[in-house]
Image 1 (cartoon, each protein chain N blue to C red):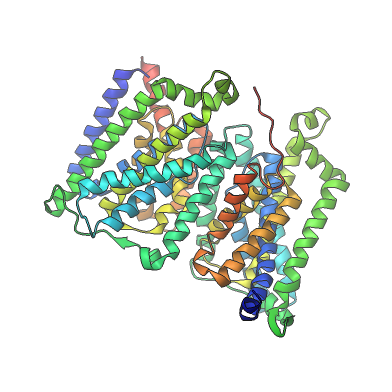
Image 2: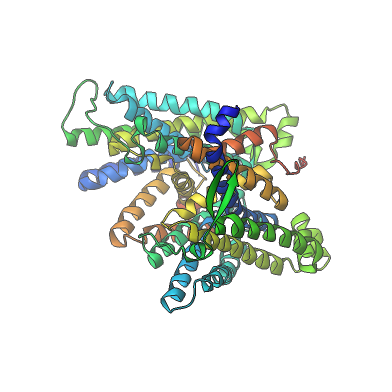
Length: 311
Length: 311
């Protein structure tokens, strides 16, 4: 064991750092998906497309700003702007015009409606940004790298992935928990999640709450994409990959669980990056194996509450 | 819809397909693939009867297809490969079914999706065995020991697909009319009551699941022998989504629905891809949205309403 650590310690350290950054990104997407599911009772297959479009938008805005001579720090504004833009432009029309028509319908139909949206958004993305890779790593380069001591060795790791991503994920989690438990709007959202009819009977405008929640969830997905954009070059298919991964995180955590999503994002993020370094063939499989293993033991997910069966 | 009318429509439809395949030889290929996919969609239809939607059924199609691709170099006999593809699909269906039949609704859909993604990644990553994303070419098939001209081979595949489509269609009709098929619909309405009556709901669903996997395997073997090339894309979750799409497009009300849907889907795809190469997915997504929002019974529902109005 000790011998193994001296041989592979550095690799393991790298895997853990990588996994942390990755988990932070996955959390951003999964938490949005989970929030939307809680209120709308719809698993949004197009959530991954919103992630992808957020990423492309952020990269485009960042490149545009750089081309006009603004300093790289401005591209941080681009990240936030992209999230707000995508959430505000795509969120309301999708909820108002499409999803609203299938509330209370069969799961199959709801899933398919969002699948249709996914197909449409994938092509929109290809038409706007083409199929050539798009990349803007200015925000990541701007902060440079940090030497992380690991045992006797040092790992140079980008400060962006080490501090910005996990920091923002923790901030999002804390902010969300505060928002949902301490503010009126947040409590209204929780009320609708718990019992829509009862909430409506109390005079809550559920229509407004669903619109708000979906837009916010869309913005979170786009923000996740925007944050991911500096770390990778964007190609078509990013959305399709992201959505299955966030499904796995959400199912592992339990549907509707916010803090749970953080734990399972960490579990799956670390698991995946350990696989990347030690068994690359199984990189893509690991999240699903974790999910299946968890669901075998706890069918409602790690933090989910089992539903009572109706007679 | 009464029995003789449906049978008459099936015969009429089959005759029309033969006529079109004869008149436009290049469409024969498209129609064979459509019939093969229709068989897989018939399996989706069974699960839809139980109110469950599998977003991972492409894994059985891929299993059938890869069975053919792996075995063809050793044993190029198509008439043996076809049942073997079905057999391996069924076997995987039993293993996966024992696990997923415990879950319902969203979890059922997502678990299927996750497991199909495991198969996808294995097909993609185990390069030595599967040649990764390049896929495997299927060459030199024999039919009953002989290797007829290409034109004849195409007709044989078309006839096989059509014959199997009719056979499975009859089987599914008989199954859905049987007490076991009725119990399947009971899972959708109120599962707990079904169990109060002493019907083991999980076993009912498992049987339907294995049957649907068998049809998926058959469809995959047909696809592999028709297109002569298999890639991991066959198992990707979007391919599963397509199958569910076709089920809804055709309409879940009749065993004819999947074939109506598959033919319509493949034709739209071929023409849309030829006309607007970058936006065919968007067009399909638009069609799907329109069907769900405005014609929830699918193509079959539109036809059935016509006949009812006339009768």
